[in-house]
Image (cartoon, rainbow, N blue to C red):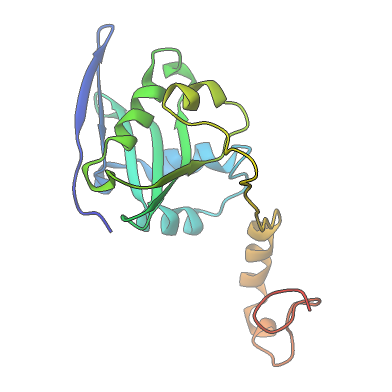
Length: 181
């Protein structure tokens, strides 16, 4: 995990903005409030978000001392990086801050020379294209294993911890190893 703090500053209009990777500075409550209501992380439990931040390179975007944006990178520091959870608060949009945040992530000194950067987006294709991203060319494709109910299941599992510890209560339809039989 990177321990390198990567700070940058920029003046936009009459306001000073900073981006850095100092996890101690993150407003985790603000990040959770935004992501729990987002289309891509809807319902994410706070504990899951905390673990995700702790195991990622997290970038905070700040106007003075107030956090106004966030993004994180999941990486092996050698070949691959995945950009996740990118947002700028609505009142700060339209100032080029999202692009600056993504460009800052791509410029992180410990992530130079990676072969592949990935991300998923429903609505910001233009932003990411301006930063050098494109759809993967055929025949390359991505597959996913997506459990849309995982957060709800996690809440139920916490309520039923004793019951789940009973022998023989494997999830129906899954063979040993977690793949359908």
